[in-house]
Image (cartoon, rainbow, N blue to C red; front, side, top):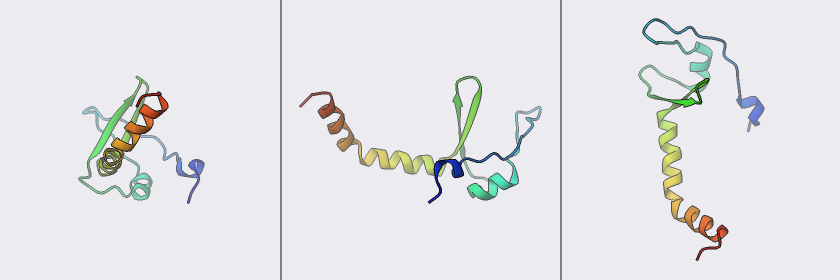
Length: 83
């Protein structure tokens, strides 16, 4: 498995067009397995950064977290000293 440093990559720059569109570099699309029509979520990180995430992967993460919600809630309550 790749370590975190190897997983982070710089793909170059993009220029936003007059309609707010930007083209994701082909190397990034290839490595990330992005296909035409794929849905991406856009997150703002403060006023300086945008993050794109594949909707399909965010749904998988949310599903995993949802299935573990009861266990996480118990652990949080236990750590807080609640019964």
